[in-house]
Length: 260
Image (cartoon, rainbow, N blue to C red; front, side, top):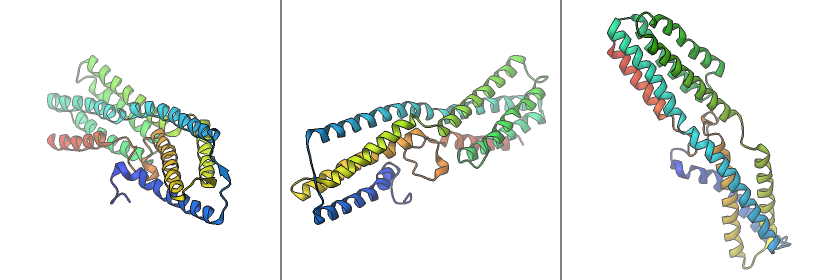
């Protein structure tokens, strides 16, 4: 599907098979004469309540998503700031430890990309982050103390952002709210299938549109709640871009080659 469907339409493509299945069931129910629910104002009120609930959940997940999309760029900036000091120290003092530090940062960046796909354990990644302290000790006689303080601050920023990403992808926003939204959406879909709407072609149209919107919103909210779920192999429609980190890895490789 990823090869043929543009990212912005991938979520709709995932939802479409469910809509087709619902319309087939609606056709069967209509032909069997099992439509026994009459539309009334109370039904409309339940639809409005479900829309309100979905809007509440969407607003909550969007705030986390807006924060999440900044994190890869900020991670790349902090790592590259440390890399700058390694390059400066190497050019100024010709220290092999400085070049080793740059290689270590490149390897750490590669491990971080693996971590996003859960191919690297969180404990292992934080252990590698703590390993930067070894290079700071080697840099102390080679540079000014305030530069070492800055490097440690950047290390702290990286650790803070990694913990935030780990928290976002391991926890859900108001799980109870998701449950009631899914239950209400399911009951409404059943209600639409069993409802009498004449003529039948109008029934198919309105049931298709209504169920598509409700299911689409439920799936979208789920995807926005965890924009770092690359490891699940789903569409990248609601994923945060990792291009800043991938581009950083390429730049670090180039800078290592320049120091040879």
